[in-house]
Image (cartoon, rainbow, N blue to C red; front, side):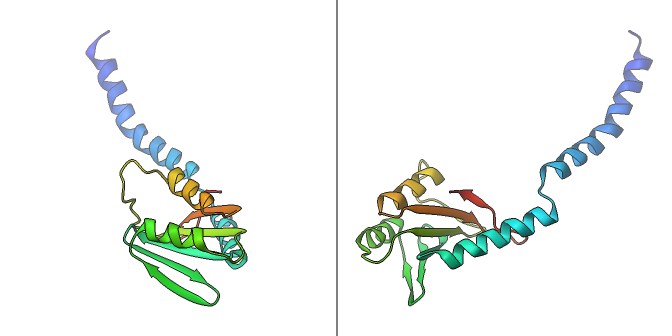
Length: 139
């Protein structure tokens, strides 16, 4: 094959590839109505929750119940408190901040979810806070 067709093909790909990548990226993102419905569902779950936890970092976790707010400085302390809770344990909603981090690099979102389930909650929903939506990451 001569160089002209290869050069022409290379130029064509250089112009088409970015447009295809942008189109693919847009098609993978949820639409505005989908994001709004997802966010409304998340807010309804928060209203229904017996307890909410705002997970900012592994050293800044805020437990929120209708009657009070309480700050914890470790996941271990939070999980111990949740385990000792005597009140209703039907729904726990965990909201991860935009900058959340897990204390143990090997601990996954799944591991934190399971630890909350072991604390006695029937349902645990983990949501990710975004500026435009609040998707559930694990239910």
